[in-house]
Length: 481
Image 1: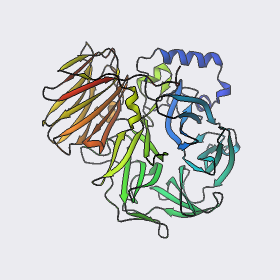
Image 2: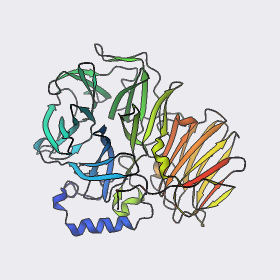
Image 3: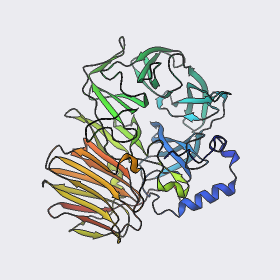
Image 4: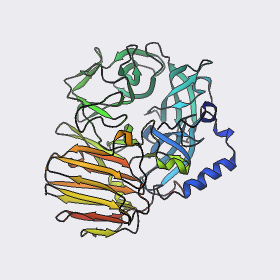
């Protein structure tokens, strides 16, 4: 179900200047008719949103960029779209932040991260260029955003001398006097890797090679790498491709997300020392390309793409695709990366309503908190015809079943996802926004993030014995006003 199957290369790689205002208006009008378009998640006004980019806290605000293809709900000519917010309730829409307007990014401004320094936000990105034979020529590049919001490109800082054409998504941080960069890459042996570079001046980078772990032969490409420290532990976070598992839980999506916790990164050997087994943060259908950053409170915040490469969703019929996850604070507990929704989102919550068995919904943007110490329960979101999505649990595992949705898709990858249940007593948060659900299980040690499509969703039901509190969620401001 490739997003590109019905589009020619020429159509996909048109620039926004080549799209008529009439076409844009028609796409926006179709999108506005979609009852599945979210109210408190970031989504594109039209076209395709994918990876979060350049996340940073800068000049008193959280800055969010995302990959955007304006020509339609398809992967093609990529731009960085720019939003900012002080509270994740009120947003400012800055429009396109980075255009593919140089020779080195002539076929798209691909993903990357940000580093705040000396009154600027430095935006690192992959320049995607195609030569006359349509061979990709990727380079790592950077731009500066000043406090007044002006963005100026400063060109290529790393050319591709060691890897296949799959060499992208730079993430930069500073450690002492050293600037460090990781890049997602495919080795000449066609294995995925998180490649390390070092610099003293941000312009001249020394290649240290792939970070060494026990997983040097995991999959054929590692996308969207991130490396950071929490509580004196090092975290490698990445999106490996070409990985599967015989476990009923792990690596069930076309592409999944993984992390590895270790003691420290040895810069001499490029080894992640004393690291744990690889783990998954999310067990839903649609969680990819997460990126993290530090804010002014010292919080490590994660935002992911709710979507996956190469999979269409029913939203495409309304000329849009993809959204960003809610912002999640990360902590480490018991060897797990623990996620929790930022408390700023509580400002969107309406009054608490206790649910007894069944609740008729007057909005499809809400959250529910479940408190349970029973072995089994079921939470069902349904319409009058019985179409539903089912979140349930046994003593040992959670299950999310979307096999009875009104609009089925991506069935070749299965309609059920499972995750281990780590304890009987649980407080579970479930965030629903029209056509997306984010579930925080096992105290945030795992999440289940998914799109779902139920026509005229109107009822929530819950098993007896589960204390359930419902809050309507208000829309965020500034995104589609």
